[in-house]
Length: 142
Image 1 (cartoon, rainbow, N blue to C red):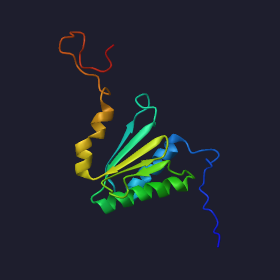
Image 2 (image 1 turned 180 degrees about the horizontal axis):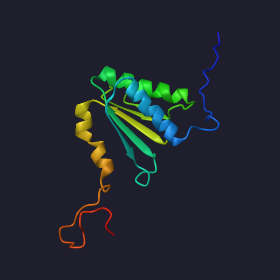
Image 3 (image 1 turned 90 degrees about the vertical axis):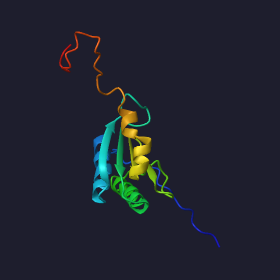
Image 4 (image 1 turned 30 degrees about the vertical axis):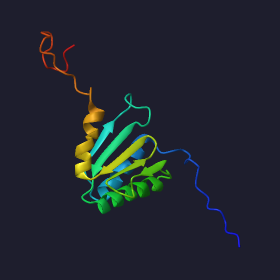
């Protein structure tokens, strides 16, 4: 008895959704299941892997997994198949790779431990140099 092979969709929607559309879909998916502390980080120029990272927290492993599944569902509604979903078995930290947008859904203790927001925002704020008399603390100063 032979069965039909399962076909995996490999086509990219034509035209593909823009990065802002993909980012909005990911955030909508997070918000629809009440993810906590949603943060968007622009990593253009810092990473060649993605343009944006979105980090959010869930209240339990079941909540984390459900949130990640919802992000996947919202992406599929745009015609985008995730490149990968990692960590959904343990569901303490689930990564949904949407190509230009990476979505991290974590338990609060895991989020605090790895501190991705701090890691990816290093160098974003101009550091004041107390030895430089020309610095006024005003970002508009040249």
